[in-house]
Image 1 (cartoon, rainbow, N blue to C red):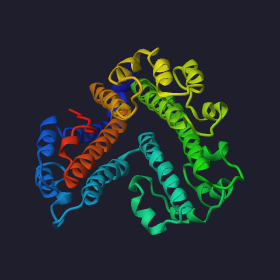
Image 2: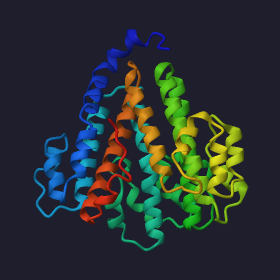
Image 3: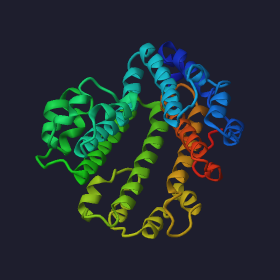
Image 4: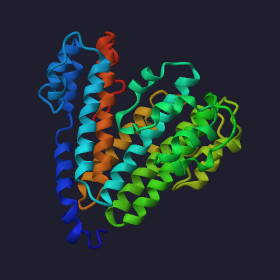
Length: 349
């Protein structure tokens, strides 16, 4: 499984692996979440978080607090951890860490283009962008009228340029084309990231192939469910699906007409039987939470092995899930909906 990684890994990667395992120990526990769910106000949440690694980021925030402030400051903690690791990383770890941010870049591009299409203020959109997905020319995305211009004027100088080869068209940007562009970009990104991890070999390739395959399968299911009842043809839908471990499953997903047909397809594959077993027939609202819970289990398992880079990917994803949890709890408290506070919280430890 390991080959000879144990002999040389610590020369360049040992220090940072120790750092990221230390960060992982700072993630919120089930006891923390239970305490947070008892909070009556956002200031109570701030007081509880003051004893965690988020404390220094929230300590100078005045009352009254807003949910956006809590999420913004917690995201800043994630960004600081990432930048600290990136500035100390050498090849190929530095490239691996950069790959982790490409998904956020794609989301930011789609956010700016969609917002511009609906005549939203560019500065307001930039504030909503994820800081890990920012690049120098992102503000000029607003001038593009179609995907060819988007590529030629802005994205040709970004890491996303190679992924645009499959979706450069002269069609005007509308909501449907933008969503197709997002799916096409993600498909190219995940396949490229997968190939890069395979080149690294060893435990990194083994663990990351499983994590990326799960991500691809989850996106395939979501694309299928979201495209039911739209004008997308079966061929369009099939082109957007990310081919992975179960190519026959993707063939079957492309022709599904409702959630129960999707369920019937996915239950044929052992890793997904347990996910769909949690759902009632015809129900899709809790599917995201079921997928997130399965992803968290897989990410935690990445820390059980040593001498590999997947722990960096796992830590970033776990921290992002933690921020989603905090955002949900904060929104429930702010809107006085405490009865729903456990609906979307995914416990990590």
